[in-house]
Length: 114
Ligand SMILES: [Zn+2]
Image (cartoon, rainbow, N blue to C red; front, side, top):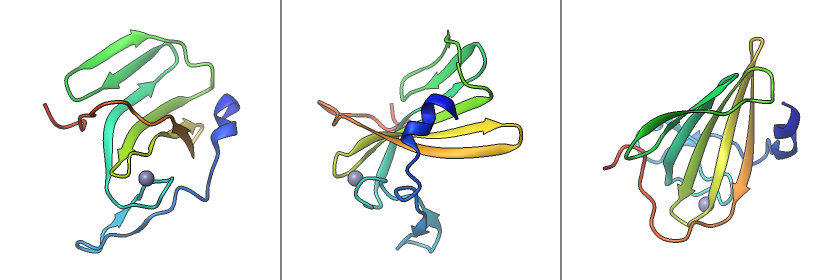
């Protein structure tokens, strides 16, 4: 995964059963809290990046320096941890890694809220 390899943190990305309905959920990779809000999703292909936020979907030119596609999910948990979860797809394999980010200043909006 090239430059993403520094963010590989397999211990933090563990599914567990939700207390509601028994489905598997991904808790916060930093504190294990179950309430995680997705605030942005992006797909970085070879030459462009598609970004979906609560108020817009955009496409911009941004070269992906790794081989394959990188799908990144930006999250904030209800304890204010902030980070990125990457799915790197290349030649039939999907690698997953996590990068903690600095705490957000101000409020955030879920991907699906206007
Ligand atoms: Zn957290």
